[in-house]
Image 1: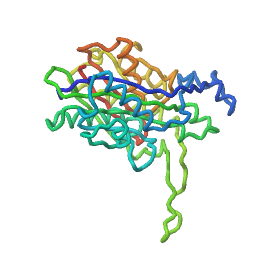
Image 2: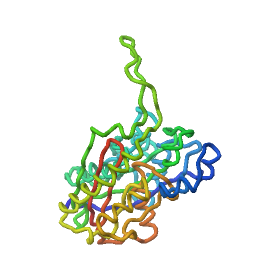
Image 3: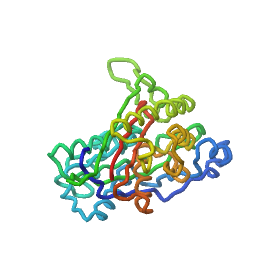
Length: 324
């Protein structure tokens, strides 16, 4: 066990709600078409906020809940595929916004697996003995990467941020095991944010295309086939059975994928809570948003065994088993 504890959780969600009926005003679609296929009714999108604003909102809430000063932090990690800019990176903006003068900060991009990958990096820092307190945030403004005339992707994604404070501890809690895998040979199943390159010494090397493009059937097949294999490896490393896990907190991409996962492991759906009906797919932010909802509702209790699962762009999958 890598001993550490989750000292606080928080989320920051834009106020504007875009329903499936709102999308029907922009394109040929309907709630009756979207919900059965995805499990999504609504998504939240920003008005004038950017990714660093959502992440800063989470950071302030985390510190307030834990009673920590910004100067207590040793590091800040932000997982995002939709940063404000390539430089300065989002975590540095957050560090400056909250005045965490003792913290180093950096971004991590593992798309929809970003929560699990980020938690892995944070746990490595804390269990190294070099650092004691850290902040990890998943934050996305995916609405700026969506072609709002393309119903194959625009119905799926939303904006939001969630995060945790992590602290080294002598208590018997923390990360029991993990399994991280990449499937780069299948990466073109999800393409987003391609930059144009027209350098002065060559022709156009790559096209400019900021928007999401997704092979929906391919991604669904990948998730239902490969994710259970990766999760099973994490459970085996942790020495626990599927029955031993109290909650499975999975990336909120599609309700049918999560139903398939529960069926695969012979577990009831009440062990696989979902919130994509309200928020849609928020990529790296989705497990953190769901975790905070469960904590605030009193559904996460000390001593529980929790499995975190992320999957998507890359293609990549990550699974962790925690004792909280």
